[in-house]
Image (cartoon, rainbow, N blue to C red; front, side, top):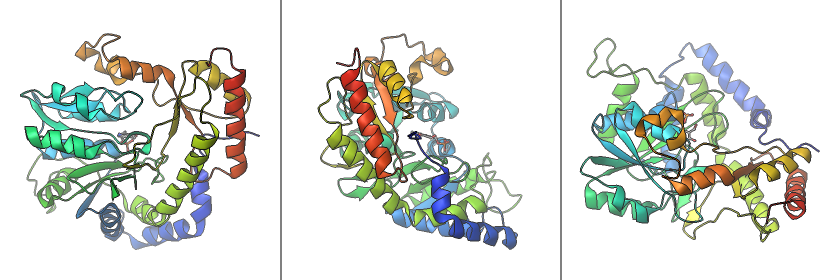
Length: 372
Ligand SMILES: Cc1ncc(COP(=O)(O)O)c(C=O)c1O
């Protein structure tokens, strides 16, 4: 049996009739941008997140960039980011002209360590962008407390965490959170898409200006905006999928529960830790092992597809060479980049496929050479 890492087409196949109807409705309407589907999706996604406002955008990257820009962040400013994240978090800060200042994850965690943030705050720091990586919420109360002490904005990068809960509340129900609707996300479009949810009416209004050439009245331009809009087709399809998000997240939780119980205690294999206050939505199920290459090779041979999120730490990417951060400067991020391996995960993974993954991992770890 071959177990795919993620079967993207399965979401469409499950909802084919509703998605086709939504697409047909938009095509026939003659409204393709900033129309009623967007308005409805924004209202529905804001309500889902427990936020007052949602502003839909072209990508998740833009959701972070434009929020930082709307807050007036730019050249000369510093923004605290996790050392271990998808590089988009860092690129978003860099796109404003500000400098990303990395903070390491806690021991045994993938997410930013609040206890290490304060030491990274300088007179130039304007914001913290915690990432709910792999669908696991970051420790928001601790981060907000530091931000309050120093007058910083907290912009959550929730690109991987639609529906995740922190102390019972959905991520996105605080000041501002950026979401991505990249196709592989828990709530994914059939193309690119993003949104910001916020409780701040002024921020929402600025984002509406920025996404549409700095204009709300056609050909009247108040600021130097950009073009970053979610199209009506994507909004209509996302509305169909949003109605199924909780059920799909529950199926991911069921897969994760099986991995966590059936792979527990294998020598040399670290499973993701889940703090008591976290209700993750398992965008990814990421294990760690010193023998990552060996484990991946044995799983591939057994027909189990895996991926690495992410093999190169952002500060060691050529894209951030200008920061001059040598190898060894962020040891936890570098170690994670060398050890993480993502197992198949998604709402359409069949029970038999989970059985196959569990059996293959058990065999690969116990039969592996250097796994212990
Ligand atoms: C953590 C994180 N931040 C930001 C992004 C950027 O989102 P997008 O690909 O929609 O621009 C992504 C996803 O790609 C992500 O995983």
